[in-house]
Image 1 (cartoon, rainbow, N blue to C red):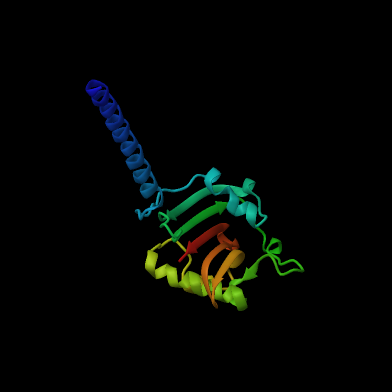
Image 2 (image 1 turned 90 degrees about the vertical axis):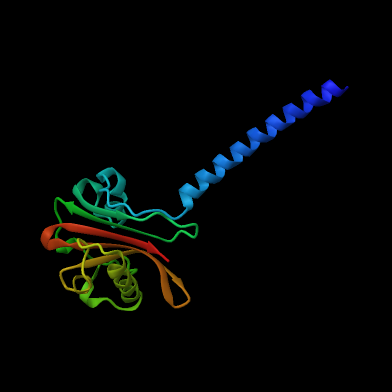
Length: 181
Protein backbone atom coordinates (compact mmCIF):
# COMPACT_ATOMS: atom_id res chain seq x y z
CA UNK A 1 0.00 0.00 0.00
CA UNK A 2 2.89 2.37 0.73
CA UNK A 3 4.33 1.94 -2.78
CA UNK A 4 0.89 2.63 -4.35
CA UNK A 5 0.57 5.84 -2.33
CA UNK A 6 4.05 6.95 -3.43
CA UNK A 7 3.24 6.37 -7.13
CA UNK A 8 -0.16 8.06 -6.83
CA UNK A 9 1.40 11.03 -5.03
CA UNK A 10 4.01 11.48 -7.76
CA UNK A 11 1.39 11.25 -10.50
CA UNK A 12 -0.77 13.85 -8.76
CA UNK A 13 2.26 16.10 -8.16
CA UNK A 14 3.18 15.86 -11.85
CA UNK A 15 -0.39 16.63 -12.86
CA UNK A 16 -0.42 19.64 -10.52
CA UNK A 17 2.82 21.00 -11.96
CA UNK A 18 1.48 20.50 -15.50
CA UNK A 19 -1.79 22.34 -14.67
CA UNK A 20 0.10 25.18 -12.95
CA UNK A 21 2.26 25.54 -16.07
CA UNK A 22 -0.82 25.73 -18.32
CA UNK A 23 -2.39 28.37 -16.07
CA UNK A 24 0.85 30.38 -16.08
CA UNK A 25 1.01 30.29 -19.88
CA UNK A 26 -2.63 31.44 -20.11
CA UNK A 27 -2.05 34.30 -17.67
CA UNK A 28 1.01 35.46 -19.61
CA UNK A 29 -0.88 35.25 -22.93
CA UNK A 30 -3.82 37.26 -21.57
CA UNK A 31 -1.54 39.85 -19.98
CA UNK A 32 0.38 40.22 -23.24
CA UNK A 33 -2.83 40.59 -25.27
CA UNK A 34 -4.61 43.06 -23.00
CA UNK A 35 -1.88 44.60 -20.91
CA UNK A 36 -0.15 47.89 -21.47
CA UNK A 37 2.13 47.92 -24.45
CA UNK A 38 4.10 50.10 -26.75
CA UNK A 39 2.65 52.06 -29.61
CA UNK A 40 3.43 51.03 -33.14
CA UNK A 41 4.14 53.28 -36.07
CA UNK A 42 4.40 50.35 -38.47
CA UNK A 43 2.37 51.23 -41.56
CA UNK A 44 -0.72 49.11 -41.96
CA UNK A 45 -1.44 47.40 -45.27
CA UNK A 46 -4.31 48.46 -47.54
CA UNK A 47 -6.01 45.17 -46.61
CA UNK A 48 -5.77 46.08 -42.90
CA UNK A 49 -7.52 49.44 -43.27
CA UNK A 50 -9.99 48.84 -46.08
CA UNK A 51 -12.88 49.11 -43.59
CA UNK A 52 -12.18 52.86 -43.28
CA UNK A 53 -13.17 53.61 -46.87
CA UNK A 54 -16.00 51.08 -46.83
CA UNK A 55 -17.56 52.60 -43.69
CA UNK A 56 -17.77 56.06 -45.25
CA UNK A 57 -18.97 54.58 -48.55
CA UNK A 58 -16.01 55.74 -50.63
CA UNK A 59 -14.99 52.12 -51.35
CA UNK A 60 -11.77 50.25 -50.70
CA UNK A 61 -10.91 50.12 -54.40
CA UNK A 62 -9.81 53.78 -54.14
CA UNK A 63 -6.90 52.98 -51.83
CA UNK A 64 -3.65 54.01 -53.47
CA UNK A 65 -1.30 53.62 -50.50
CA UNK A 66 -1.26 53.75 -46.73
CA UNK A 67 1.02 56.67 -45.87
CA UNK A 68 1.22 56.40 -42.08
CA UNK A 69 -0.19 54.45 -39.13
CA UNK A 70 -0.04 54.87 -35.37
CA UNK A 71 -1.61 52.22 -33.14
CA UNK A 72 -1.27 51.83 -29.39
CA UNK A 73 -1.89 48.64 -27.45
CA UNK A 74 -5.31 48.35 -25.81
CA UNK A 75 -5.48 48.42 -22.05
CA UNK A 76 -7.70 46.04 -20.10
CA UNK A 77 -10.42 48.71 -20.24
CA UNK A 78 -9.96 49.05 -24.02
CA UNK A 79 -8.26 52.46 -23.93
CA UNK A 80 -6.26 53.01 -27.11
CA UNK A 81 -5.68 55.20 -30.14
CA UNK A 82 -5.51 54.16 -33.80
CA UNK A 83 -4.68 56.66 -36.53
CA UNK A 84 -4.03 56.17 -40.26
CA UNK A 85 -3.30 58.39 -43.26
CA UNK A 86 -4.39 56.91 -46.60
CA UNK A 87 -3.76 58.24 -50.10
CA UNK A 88 -6.69 57.52 -52.41
CA UNK A 89 -6.89 57.55 -56.19
CA UNK A 90 -9.78 60.00 -56.53
CA UNK A 91 -12.27 62.10 -54.61
CA UNK A 92 -14.67 64.83 -55.63
CA UNK A 93 -16.20 67.23 -53.13
CA UNK A 94 -19.63 66.51 -54.62
CA UNK A 95 -19.40 63.01 -53.07
CA UNK A 96 -19.05 64.42 -49.57
CA UNK A 97 -22.71 64.92 -48.69
CA UNK A 98 -25.11 64.18 -45.84
CA UNK A 99 -28.29 62.16 -46.31
CA UNK A 100 -31.74 63.12 -44.98
CA UNK A 101 -31.10 61.40 -41.64
CA UNK A 102 -27.94 63.50 -41.06
CA UNK A 103 -25.49 60.67 -41.71
CA UNK A 104 -22.56 61.49 -43.93
CA UNK A 105 -19.91 64.16 -44.33
CA UNK A 106 -19.59 67.48 -42.48
CA UNK A 107 -17.20 70.27 -43.34
CA UNK A 108 -14.72 70.95 -40.55
CA UNK A 109 -15.49 74.66 -40.38
CA UNK A 110 -19.20 74.02 -39.85
CA UNK A 111 -18.96 71.48 -37.02
CA UNK A 112 -21.60 71.85 -34.33
CA UNK A 113 -23.29 69.69 -31.70
CA UNK A 114 -21.93 66.16 -31.41
CA UNK A 115 -19.52 66.71 -34.32
CA UNK A 116 -17.99 69.64 -32.45
CA UNK A 117 -17.74 67.49 -29.29
CA UNK A 118 -15.98 64.76 -31.26
CA UNK A 119 -13.52 67.24 -32.79
CA UNK A 120 -12.72 68.59 -29.32
CA UNK A 121 -12.03 64.98 -28.25
CA UNK A 122 -9.60 64.58 -31.18
CA UNK A 123 -7.95 67.92 -30.41
CA UNK A 124 -7.17 66.68 -26.88
CA UNK A 125 -5.27 63.67 -28.29
CA UNK A 126 -3.20 65.46 -30.94
CA UNK A 127 -0.62 67.01 -28.58
CA UNK A 128 -0.54 63.92 -26.34
CA UNK A 129 0.34 61.43 -29.05
CA UNK A 130 2.82 63.53 -31.06
CA UNK A 131 1.70 62.41 -34.52
CA UNK A 132 3.26 65.03 -36.82
CA UNK A 133 1.65 63.72 -40.00
CA UNK A 134 -1.93 63.91 -38.68
CA UNK A 135 -4.21 66.89 -39.21
CA UNK A 136 -3.55 69.90 -37.00
CA UNK A 137 -6.27 71.49 -34.87
CA UNK A 138 -6.59 74.29 -37.43
CA UNK A 139 -6.91 71.82 -40.32
CA UNK A 140 -9.61 69.81 -38.50
CA UNK A 141 -11.80 72.90 -38.44
CA UNK A 142 -11.04 74.24 -41.90
CA UNK A 143 -13.19 74.27 -45.03
CA UNK A 144 -10.59 72.00 -46.68
CA UNK A 145 -11.38 69.02 -44.44
CA UNK A 146 -14.55 66.94 -44.18
CA UNK A 147 -15.39 64.63 -41.29
CA UNK A 148 -17.49 61.47 -41.35
CA UNK A 149 -18.56 60.45 -37.84
CA UNK A 150 -18.69 56.66 -37.61
CA UNK A 151 -19.06 56.30 -33.83
CA UNK A 152 -19.22 58.79 -31.00
CA UNK A 153 -19.76 57.31 -27.54
CA UNK A 154 -20.57 59.54 -24.60
CA UNK A 155 -20.01 59.14 -20.90
CA UNK A 156 -22.28 61.74 -19.41
CA UNK A 157 -22.04 64.82 -21.59
CA UNK A 158 -18.52 64.25 -22.95
CA UNK A 159 -17.28 61.84 -25.60
CA UNK A 160 -15.43 58.83 -24.18
CA UNK A 161 -14.69 57.18 -27.53
CA UNK A 162 -14.82 58.25 -31.17
CA UNK A 163 -14.23 56.79 -34.60
CA UNK A 164 -13.98 59.53 -37.20
CA UNK A 165 -12.95 59.57 -40.84
CA UNK A 166 -11.54 62.76 -42.33
CA UNK A 167 -10.88 63.54 -45.96
CA UNK A 168 -8.83 66.37 -47.44
CA UNK A 169 -9.87 66.37 -51.12
CA UNK A 170 -7.13 68.74 -52.33
CA UNK A 171 -4.45 66.08 -51.83
CA UNK A 172 -6.71 62.99 -51.92
CA UNK A 173 -5.86 61.99 -48.37
CA UNK A 174 -8.12 60.18 -45.92
CA UNK A 175 -7.34 60.19 -42.19
CA UNK A 176 -8.84 57.74 -39.71
CA UNK A 177 -8.93 58.50 -36.01
CA UNK A 178 -10.21 56.10 -33.33
CA UNK A 179 -9.62 56.51 -29.62
CA UNK A 180 -11.18 55.45 -26.33
CA UNK A 181 -10.47 56.76 -22.84
